[in-house]
Structures are given as C-alpha cells and as structure tokens.
Image (cartoon, rainbow, N blue to C red; front, top):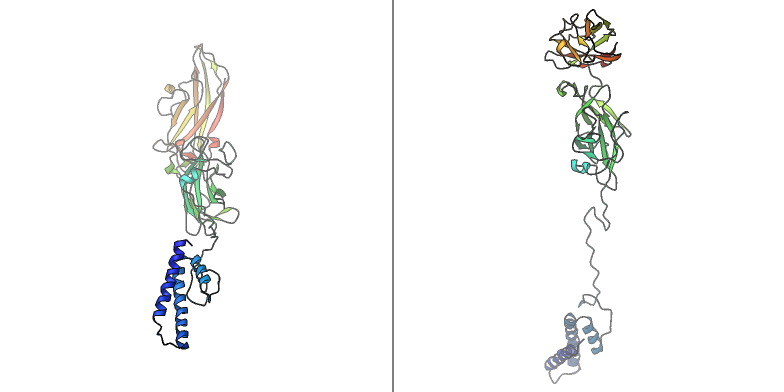
Length: 399
C-alpha cells in the first residue's frame, strides 16, 4: 500500500471516532460506554469492508493490524461481509453430448467428383488382357487412352453402417470398347479413400457395356447394363438395356434384383462364310485366271436384308466375268478389298458364289493369303451384330 493510501485510511478511522464520540451524551454510565463500544465495533467492520473493496487485500492486512479485536485470516478473491464462508459456485453443467475432450465423429465415405479425381485410388483388377493401372492410380475426367475414366458416381449407405459411401462407374479407355466396372469407395479413420469392392464389371460375352448407376434408399446399387458395346458401326441405341440391383454381402457384392441374362438382340444376326483356295492357271491370251467358291449362310432365325462380302485379294487380282451376277453394283471396279453386296438372305438359307478372277499378262503374282469376311446389314445398310462372329471370316490361299 502506498503512503497516500495509508493516510487516507487513517483519516477515515479518525472521522469515524469523531462521529461516534459526538453521539455519546456526557452523563453516560458504564452502559452508555458499552453501547458506544458496540456501535464502534460494527461501524469499524463496515468501514474496513469498504476499504477492502477499494484497496484490495493489502488494506485488509492494514485493518487487521490497526484493530485489536480482529484476527488475521485467509484472503478471499471476493471478500464477503458475512461471518460464514461463501460456498463455491455450483459448476454450470456442460451441454449434452459434450465433454472436455469431445469425440470426433468418424467421417463418412461421401466423395464429390472433384475430390475423387484429386486423390489416388486402388481399383479391382481389370479382366485379363491389355488394361489400365489399378494400384494408387488417379481417375481422369476425360477419355484418355490407357487411363481410368470416371464416367458417373452416386452416394448411399451400401453397407448398412449408417454412413454414406461413394459408388463410381469407371472405364479403362482402350480404343472405343475398353472394359468398365462399378466400384464402391469408403473413407478410413484418417480420411483417406479406401476401396470397398467391385459391384459389377463388363465381360467379353455379356454385359459388354455399363450405361448408368443409381443407389437407392436400402443400399441397393442399381446398374443399367447393356448386352452389346457400341462402336464399330454398332450404335448404342441398339444395345439391349437392363437395370440390375446389387447388394453388399459383407465381402462381395451379389445381384439381388433384375434380369440375369439377355435374349437375342433384335439388331443381331448369325451368318457364316467358307471359301476355297484360288488357283490361277495361264489362259490363251497369256493372262492367268481362276475360280474360288464362296458360300454364305444365314444361321439365324430371322432374315437378313443385306450381306456384305469382302475378299482381301491383292490389287492385281481382279474380278472376271463369271459368278459375280448376284453382287449389287460393279465389283470389278471396287478397290482393294474386292466388295460384293448381296441382297436378302432368308433364315437358314445359303448362297453359293463361284467367283472368277484374272491376273493380267506380265504381272508377277506369288502365293499368298487373303481374308474373306462377311457382315450382316439391315435395310438401311447399317451393320448388325453377329452373335457368333468367329465364323464370319476365313482365309483363302491364292497362287
């Protein structure tokens, strides 16, 4: 306490004494002295409390030394005029669900498109053959050869744990018919992307294409599958489409709804071709001529509007006169390969073509192989898919 504060406090006590003595009448007996002494003690206590509020704990220590009836005691942060100690304040209860160390909820597996494109992921293995990377690879936003293209995604609780996961449709871009698969992703406790598993994938047989996906409320992953992959003259609209549902079974996904197979595509056909070798002999004019027998058969259950026949013989081997009448147009003027377009071929029917060829005099031609191939076409000359294209091509020897 400063010297000025000490003087101010002493002055306050002196003022109190003057006031208290002025109230005492002269002819007072001992009783009057006791009354004055009691009033003095009460006013002194009130004055000391006021001084304590003004000057803090040091003033309390000074008052204790000046008043012979006061014993020093512990200094409280907030002094009280009551003789009884003030109980400590009741702690305010924390809001429900909170504590000094709040529990951080485990994040769910919802990833936006940009988030999934921005981190490396691990994909289930692609089918055998040329493929794309699978371990810690980044998905791409565009069709880039040899990359994993992110086509679509959706979200839902697919494993029943109360949190949301991400399901993505991904294609390994290899030309126009790269394999595709639907993959489920989650998030680990550290916030990183983890792979739950593959929902469904394309196959060499069917389905050959995946068009869309949708996660419904019960966690079923619905995927729109197609029997035939578009490309190679086959428009996507011709592919038969089915919605199939898949559910997580703890270790893998299994189909739980929708068809399990495809019927014959209305835009498909089944034709075959065979061919004999072309043996050339020298004619009277010095040229070389020969005939190859080609058979085209419709093995399907529906008629085919047109058949496209192509023979990959060298440019020096040109169509002659005999056997080419069934061909539309002028095959002798077609460039390599030689093309013959046939008309309607009924279901189960076969056409035989004895096609003659000529090599001009003085042209040297050795022995070689030529591909002979057929395609079925509809009335608009669009190619149909052959359900068994293994017998659509043979090799013919010429010599």
